[in-house]
Length: 212
Image: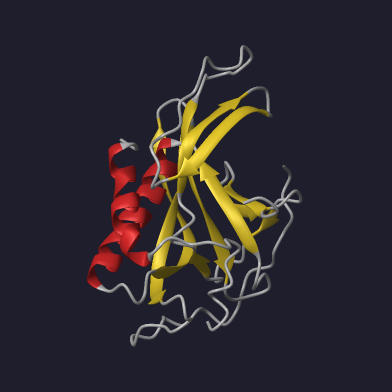
């Protein structure tokens, strides 16, 4: 865990400012050069242009200073407009949505993560989401970090496993939603808490590249 401090952000705000900024997500939800992380419609976590499937047993450190919020406008499979700012800042102002935007401006939240174990160790990704379930998962994680910071500012970095839940929609069938399972808290200096992380299973599933 001693390389956990090597997040891509060059300038980070103080740890003390984290709690208030992260808690702002509670009222809104009812990097460049990094791979894009997402959960596909079949409930698999994938990243990158090749849609590489995330190892189920891998752990990921969430950069607590990377949380952003804002708006995005989607056309037919392409981004027509996007305005994102750190959660410490007010939501950005937007003009009328692009004329071809399917749903106008949609509220989006996001963050960045770094893989800490497994085949993709060292990989940094960004996760941005507009779905209700995704935003709630990010909101819950943000509030967990805020609570941790209020209790112990020396370990503000959650190490998580990427999980999923599902529910059945009467029109669309099974809908998968993300879960960020916190397995440990570590400091920016790489020091972990005293409680050990539960051991991952020895066998890991075969990874596949999924269709975009």
